Length: 541
Ligand code: HEM
Image 1 (cartoon, rainbow, N blue to C red):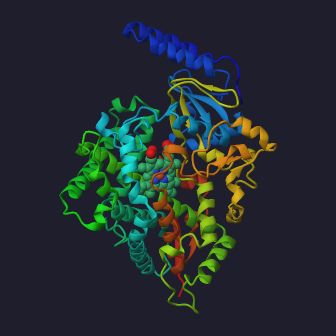
Image 2 (cartoon, protein in one colour; image 1 turned 180 degrees about the vertical axis):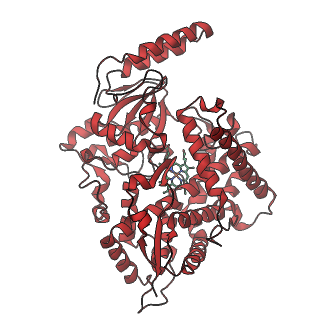
Image 3 (cartoon, rainbow, N blue to C red; image 1 turned 90 degrees about the vertical axis):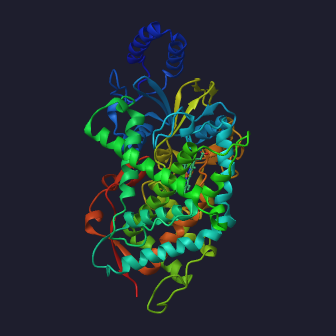
């Protein structure tokens, strides 16, 4: 329920902070806090918060997207939340979120203060292209410097590695004979792991070579992300001596060793033409304005983010896509027909179909729609995108985001809330993407939108507020911090899905089919299958 009444909790915090401030003479911080609270206090807020934790006790960080979906339905597309003393404005409105990205481009909104939450180091050297503020020259240097690794020509040259990796995986699955369930989430992880190994670091991680051999690194990454998430919402956790926190510290150490090894290996390896175009190749060549190469610590932090972003996103998207297809036999059949028509499906008439090529990407429209629809319903970036206001930002609906307030852009709820015009939002309907306009929100009386959204468009495809439409589907984010690796994802996902379906008819095994999707998922930085997606992969010919 919306609450527009005076928040009785914040004065308590204010009093506490005042005492602390008097003791530490940090009065400006207290006045800043008071100003934030006074500015946003009229926004609705979810009921049930507690005195100290605020809304923290109302949701699990591992299912926060669902809490946000509920709130944005009940409270509207802009509301406030409190995590301990931190005031957060949550935005789940396509128009307002575009204004946030405009303000970010103008320097009024930034990434929050954070070191690399995923391996939790200390200091500037631990920042990376994801955590660094947009105003920082290092962010620009790394973003610009690594962009050529994701250029279409470069990715085209790497595509044969993806095909080889998929060939190895399908050979491994074929050996199961279609009788025992295969964990397709694990298969997809192996694929994206080996792909980032090659494209990112010129290394064969060999996860696709033996699908029965467990890859310990997956669990390590997964646990590390979970620990990272827990610390974002519990700043006191770092002082905890609990068993699971200490285990988290030990795993953190182990994963740092992996990044360190990777950096050492790339530094020591004689350069090859292909390595020079890998992400690591670009990172190793970068020099700052004073002509200095990145330090080893900085390289580790950058390697870490590409390692995680590369392996934790595309793999889960492949797994969710196959899950939805198996759940929706009519969509699966249509996709099989499309692949067959393109000569890419093994059938009795075509027992040796041609190989999937780079040129196929983009031509297989139904495949594209199936992936997009999966990304709408189960976007891997379901965690809201976190920012902070550097200076006051007035949104076109009159709400002011005061300097210092935390901002969370809730993508998950935007992709399915019917108020943004989604028809049958909970249904898996790949056909909806046949209409290119489906990407956009067009309120009745588009003219008012032009007024509502004063932001300039940031991406060429961000929408056109003056034409009365704005993007409501943006799984790769938007604006200057839009996903750097999206082109890699866009070639990897269709290749993996098409190459699996080429060989196998895929059905959900009972242990997965009988569970609801909320029971199958977990939000550990990315929205991923909690404990696998079991499928029967029946060889086609
Ligand atoms: C399905 C696949 C993927 C999805 C849905 C996805 C989604 C996103 C989103 C939403 C952001 C913006 C975060 C924000 O605004 O705070 C982002 C940023 C980023 N992504 Fe991805 N991503 C994917 C794959 C990849 C891959 C394969 C890589 C690299 C190997 C990658 C590297 C990055 C990096 C480095 C950033 C930070 C960019 C910056 O802040 O300037 N992503 N991604």
